[in-house]
Image (cartoon, rainbow, N blue to C red; front, side, top):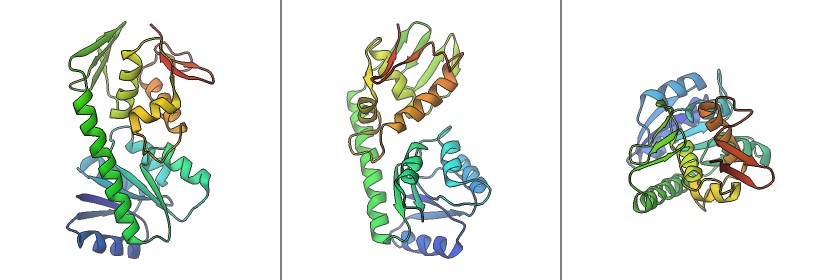
Length: 230
């Protein structure tokens, strides 16, 4: 695997890189948030180990920016152990969370678990996916090429944003609970909670809705979930 380690403590980076390279991985490093975003945007990484407390951009901000253009797996590493910090990290798009100090063997096990979960999810999606185009109202979703077009304008969605929209459009007027969407899009083993769904729906609306505060496509049934209104 090609792994990016992001931490401003060079001794930690050096130690992690050495340990990961012993298992045959290729490791690159970044020492601040801006450098991390630039490297992820220009590189082809299989995994990012991202520290929370970084110069220039925090780990939260890095995660948010990266999720605008990439679904690369991210494990957040931080000295903060409070539940709110963990939830915020997962809501920003991290796939897992580890608190310093940690055992490197446990970190490697977490990396393997995240990669295994994503591999199984991709295989399941490939097996069960429907071919062709979902067209409903002014929305056209090319499920083969993961392209979203509305009124002949193409929108650049992340894979999870696309999947949320695909699920809702495939069953218009059906209300999907946040728990159901979390299970369908992220998988049953995902360690985050339903607020992850809210974050991605908000970002989806910011991209495709003419007025995100008064959505045309992705509607909320308060206390229940989300639906596409036909």
